[in-house]
Length: 152
DNA sequence: GCCAACGTTGGC
DNA sequence: GCCAACGTTGGC
Image (cartoon, protein in one colour):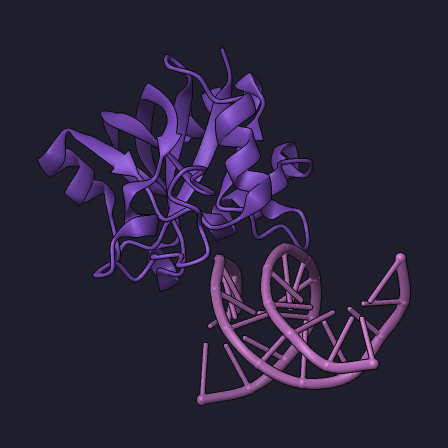
């Protein structure tokens, strides 16, 4: 079982939206490295932290979710109405994948990016390493557990 | 809004 | 295959 951190801009899809929906499709991933991780490494039962990106002071980890469906073709790539549509993705060989997640817990307290950066414990966390813009990243159980504790 | 750090595209 | 131009991410 693996642990992940998954980013979403709250203006696009926030943890409040996931709380409302209880279960959601994590779609719109348009990066090959991330797609490959979803395809090859992410499995039902894996745990993931929900991270609000591009959210000013509210940027940080806001809760926990669980993977409830393995990677499958992301329908938004073929949706003419979607901002994530990819006209170059072949219908018979979809380029992009999505997973389904369900909400496990909303943190009572935001674990802000600045807080995470200020702790040496997280020095080797991919999220805070320079130049890492991937929207999905694996993290160690010890980092996962610590972040969960900080959110309570 | 700025900009660093990427990733992608397409001409050659 | 190289690389310049362009687009995107995401912190600040």
